[in-house]
Length: 334
Image 1 (cartoon, rainbow, N blue to C red):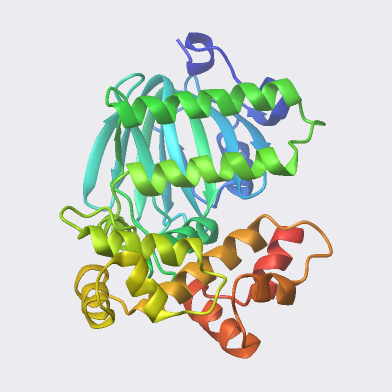
Image 2 (cartoon, rainbow, N blue to C red; image 1 turned 135 degrees about the horizontal axis):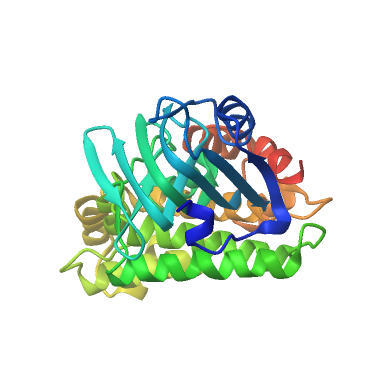
């Protein structure tokens, strides 16, 4: 029984690829995702079929992909995006770097990172697939961890019988239903689009294990035994990030002396007070630009966030996020 026969097809109005030809499937789906080798395991491609439906949003897309028969898929490194793959029917064996997993409905899903080589074997398999732009994920990870933007590599295994996995599967089902309700000609309002982006990024970066998980936990002040005074100081900085740094007021708000604060920030957060404030402002600028509407002024946003020297701001932003503020804005407007 084929995947499309054993599970209800989703996003049917968003059809991009429907074919029984292996070469055509590889070429067309490769244009949507990335070039890859696609080979049926049977000598004559018995029972092969391919279906790809795709609803695209700003920075992410939700997809329904189904292969009839057994096929091997070798995309190598995905390069441009992350993929969350939730099985709806059939099964898939997936190798991501040195990890291997068997994906099956209700049990195990996969999270593929763009810098980890991947190979897959699908058997009459249909999956709901969330694609997220690599730069968007890496920039948000940088903002959350206080580090420069760089590669983020996830544990590829998502346990669908665990609370986090169930919540993610529910989210993707809701996104599919929303896309189907809107239809191909519908448009998601900017505020709703931003809410979905935030929810998806929050879930992946804070609830799925990856290489920056510990750094994010430390930088956000959630590490165990973080002194109350440092939590208060961090919260005061966040609430007053647009104001000039006043160490005396910060010490008063936290209840300890300035020197103790300086040493505490270094010891528990791994950064100075001024560096944490800069990171907060840069994260705010990146978030504002990522949700900007037309005719926005980078200068006005920067001043509103407390930057006083635009040249230094631009240099720090480029060092952290790997591009200029104007480049972030252009991608948002494109």
